[in-house]
Image 1 (cartoon, rainbow, N blue to C red):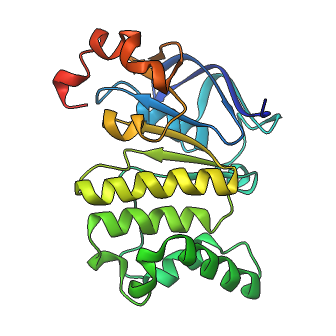
Image 2: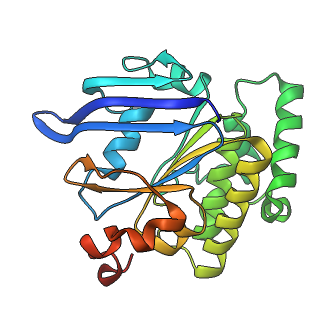
Length: 241
């Protein structure tokens, strides 16, 4: 069995005096894709931002590759192999596609950065004809693929993805799903994905969990999710998941 890459125990966090996460336990193995489904306001984005270090934990521990990073800076976690693709993508609108990718590869030497960017463009061929276009003029789907490429340029071991299908046309959603699945296998990447799109989750993940009011359900293998009763219990189908 693959070794554990991310282990979270009793994680708590929130905003000021407002608690959001209430003792999250989560484990993710190397090369595994775990999907977390939940309605808006249930703590999905807070969970990812806490793991990435953008929101301080108020309790519990976060181990990345066996090392305690609970109090580490976002930059330290990034150097340790953690990549975040935030909700809304947050690409640099005034920079070209190639310049956005260069931001992701900024820790590499100039020569190595060029090689990394070329490799990522080969993996994401949709970017090749638009390398000189500014990020702000791209479609939502192109921006999402660029955000993935920028993240890959940092050579992460674990990618955190927040609502990657939001505002994207179905054909691009399928392309992103297939690309992620291919790259995860080729690079032995781990992916922690929070989403509201159930079909996207079913086509990508190995296991799935539900987050409700800052707490996680037990994990269920994706191929058993429809029969687990979780979708019906949380009325996912009826709300567009």
